[in-house]
Image (cartoon, rainbow, N blue to C red):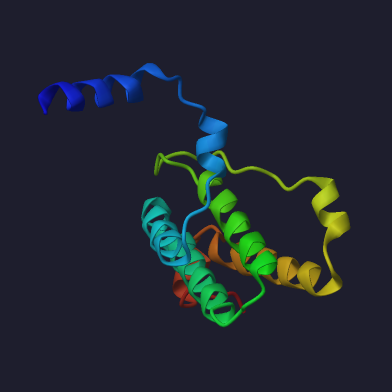
Length: 139
């Protein structure tokens, strides 16, 4: 029994790891959902709350989808997002969107992206003495 365990362990470690193929594997919906929320724990509190709310809303919106092609696309896009999240909580290296991605977006998607941009600008406004006196808002 011990020899077979040892043989199994050596066969796993002797193969080189293909990180691209490993990250391309899809996760089932619930483990992916949990992994996304867990990955958001390393983000600043404002980004975490925005990200958690968005993930929860999207998964809720798509829970009754039965088209397998659509489900695969949905899960693969969220897996790619999960792979892009920084592993280090102190990392500030966020990736910019490609111009080709903008060309493929529908008007509704562009509107959502525009609203997201303005929501994030509101969150990351620098705090000044004037903002504190007015309760965090400008008049």
